[in-house]
Image 1: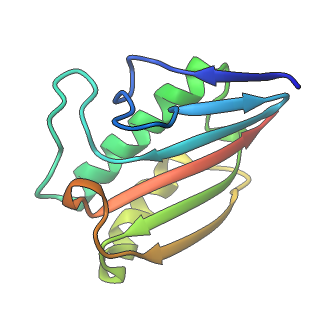
Image 2 (image 1 turned 45 degrees about the vertical axis):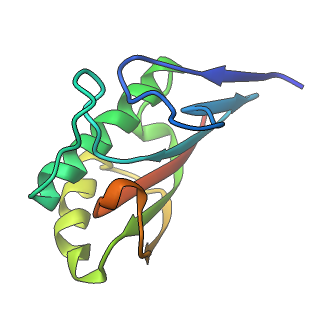
Length: 126
């Protein structure tokens, strides 16, 4: 099996027994990212749009570390602390994923890591 772990300093380091991403052949499975600034370790809070932009930058850093980018994304999962945030998160998300859109689900989940409002995971394919 052609499997490798992807790690980059361009996204927050894992805080548990998981990897930022795992590539298996032409598929890349990205762990959920929250709005942690990878340089300072400070959580971006107060504005769900700013939070979502940081999440997307973190995801892009992991994608690029593996030689992928947003056009390779085939599936995303968005976790929200409250579905009332959907429109604002969706607008930011859409600004990064243009063209042929990936499959996606968006769910409300209580108790996201560190009390964040949004977490996003992805699957990409070449």
